[in-house]
Length: 347
Image (cartoon, rainbow, N blue to C red; front, side):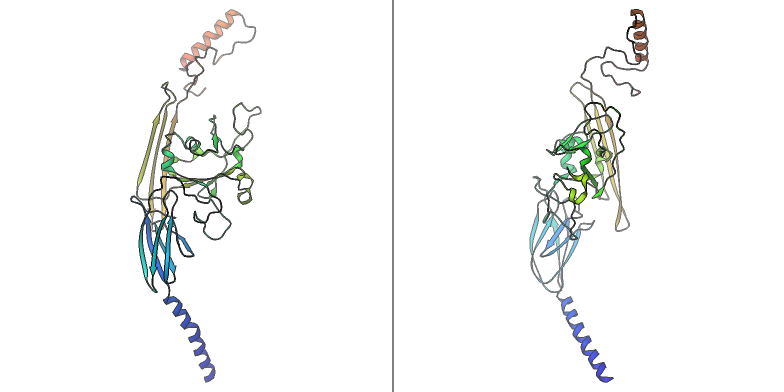
C-alpha cells in the first residue's frame, strides 16, 4: 500500500510540473483597433500563426509564446498596419492601433469559406470588391442600385415599374445570390403576366429587391464577381452580393440627398437616419429609417389621345367629338397632365 501511494505522488509530480512550466511561458498581446472617430469591430489581427478578430469594442487579445512577432492588423478600406513586438514570459503587451483610411480601394475580403478557420483578406481564396457606404455616397446617385451601377463595371440594372432588377456579368437576375450579413436574403414575389412588356430585364426570373435595404443601415457591400455555385448553389452562378449592416452604437447619422433633371422634373428626395443603442455589455440594437421620393419624367411630348374613354373604330364624327369632350372633362377633374402623363391617382 505504501508503495502504491509513492507511485501516485511521483506520477502526479510528473504531470503537474510540465503544465505549470508551460503556463508560465504564455504571454499576451492585447490592444484596441480604432480610427480618429470610432473603434473598428471585426478587424483582423495576426501575430505569428495566431489570427483573431476584434470584438464590438475594437479590442483584441492574442496569447503567444515569448519571442519576437510581427503584429499585422487589416480592415476593409484601411491601410494594413504592421508593428514589431518583442514579448517576454508572463508579460502582457498593450497596443493602441490607429488605422489610416486607404483612398485607393486595394483591400479585398472573402464572402465565405468551407474552412473552419476564420478567413480574412490576408489569406482569401477569391478576392471581392469591398465598397464602403461612405464611398458609394460620393457617386452622387440617389439610390443604392444606381450607386452600384456607377461603381462596379459588371453590375447592370434597368428601371422598371415594380423594382429594379440587378445582374452580374450579363446573366439572369436569379443567378445573383444576395446575402445580408452572410445569410441568404429572401427572394421577392413576382407575378409574370402572360405577355411580358418589352424592356423587362430577366423575364421569367425571380430576383431580390435591393431597394428594400435602407441605405442608412448599410456599412459596406462585398461583391464577388465570379461564379460560386460550388459553394453557394446554382443561384450564385453570376456571383454573390453580400450586404453588411451597421453595428455602431451611441451615435446618430443622417443622410439627405436632393436632385432633379435639367428640365425641372424627375425630382429626387432621399432622407435616411440611423441610430445604434447598446444593450447590456454584449448586445445592441441598430435602427434605420429611409424615405424615398422620385417624381416621374417624360420626354415623349404632349399626349394628344384619349385617356379614360376609348373612341370605337368606325365611330361617327359627332360621336368622336362627344367622347373626346367627356374624356377631357375627366382629365380636368383628375388633374391629369398631358405633358407628363401620370395622374395623381396613379392611373
